[in-house]
Image (cartoon, rainbow, N blue to C red; front, side):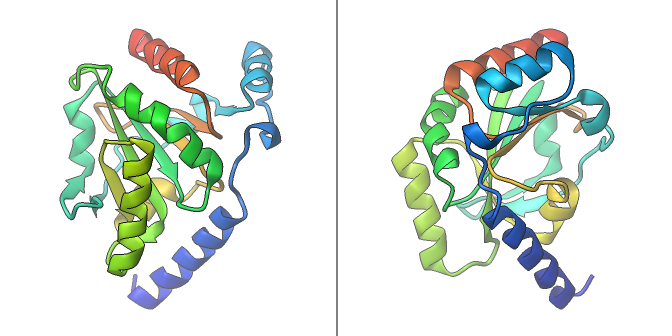
Length: 200
């Protein structure tokens, strides 16, 4: 795909994401039993595993905000990886990041790791834009890797993302186990992480 077509696709993605900052009180609950009840309480939408497990073996190569190259091989480094897709303009995203920063430090890295994806900052963005994103990361205490958007990351993982924050849980094989649209408190994330670690 040429760069022009990719930029058009990214403009479309950013337009969708700009109009889709997910707040706790505007999430639609999922349709099934207890899951729907839990979603109403937490304001989240869980995507059933049958739907989100259909994209095994995610492949991407991207740069983090510090300029390091990160590939999809990062998933093999931990039993469970939480991938939090956020944006610099999204207040619900920023409000949950301090809790995510704490969560990232509470587990053995062989068991659990956390990665952020900054959906509105492209790889190769100007220095001011990158520095603004880095300042938000620092202010929120979200001291875990944050990837910048590029073509590989978009096609490898983000094609179906329609709102931020969106969070994926990925196993060491690069298979998506679960997805949550919307922000949650640290305790709710901790419960989900522990549940997925027990199940997988």
